[in-house]
Amino acid sequence: MKKNILIAEDHPLFRVALKMALKNISQDFIFTEADSIDLLQRIMEKKVKPDIVILDLNMPGAHGFSGLHFIRGYYPNCPVVVISGYEDKEIILQAMQAGAIAYIPKSVRTELLIKALTTALSGGQWFPEGIVQIDQKKDQSAKSGQTASGIASLTPQQFRILSMVGEGLLNKQIAHELAITEATVKAHLTTLFKKLGVRNRTQAVIALKTLEISDEETAFFNPQDAGNLQKMPLTQTQNSHPPGNNTLH
Image 1 (cartoon, rainbow, N blue to C red):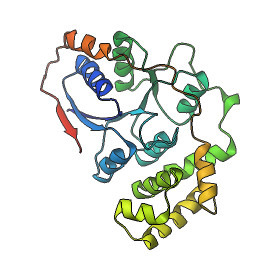
Image 2: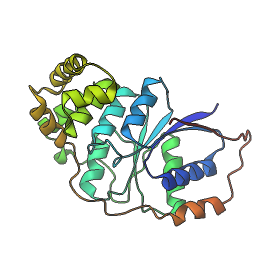
Image 3: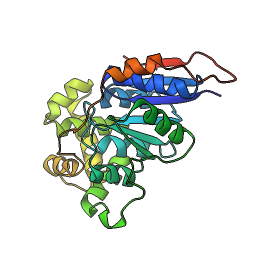
């Protein structure tokens, strides 16, 4: 049976690299792609049920770990692999605490990328060397933990509105962007405020910021790696079929 792989990554070349790496593991994958949090939400609303999600933390519309917490809440039984340019140990530990089964830096070599993905697809965990278990002393603060659980309980529309609030949009602007009434926006805000344990927009923005990553990305994917992957022979499987590709626009 083919597995549905949801790739949430905004860099086209890295999406190509990921698909090529996955094809080296098996030809029996169906790919669904999203290049922003907004598109990811629309995919979710179409009731797509992935077998595994590969997520870039730094995507358009993302606020640090908010995207990871939202996906974990929406797909509680679906493994999530984080692919990121962030290599700080604290960030990797936070991803582990948020429920990611793997954390793959974008600077890894092709061979290691394939090994990490193979491990995750087999149900195992993979993290950079030296990150072997969650440090219990570095648990999330009560506030960020409450925000994370609140975000995990949001619907796609509520999360979309929260992201827009975080970007500074007013109710009128949000209503225009989503083609809904201001009254509907206010109703969604009332609900998400309760879920986040806040009273107003300002507090919601402050809560959202507790999940953000302030440091700049320290490593980036080298486009040459995509070319290297294309030169590698594909792993032969007993039932080899051309993979599907569900890309929403």
